[in-house]
Length: 122
Image (cartoon, rainbow, N blue to C red; front, side):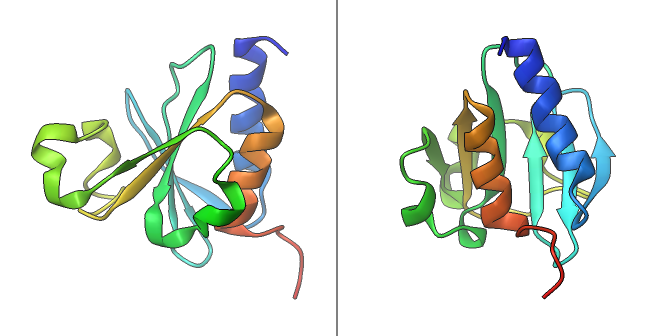
């Protein structure tokens, strides 16, 4: 799968998930919200990988720790803010974030499942 194909597949995965709704489309971040209120941010211009941002409190990191990721602490956003388009209306508040650097579609499936569930009925 090429980088462009990965980007399209990740966006199709998120946009077709029954528990996820798009909330904002900014120049450097597309924002989504789950039916339970969790926020997911994806940087649309990435090609070789996809950055998927989620609230650190919305995932059990032990289940996805093998996926490359970086933690962004809310207390030092002035120095480390990953992408200013992720914040504000329909985005993240000042909370701890995890950015997953997804290079394979299965990694994206696992991150989305961790935040939004399977989309199935209980």
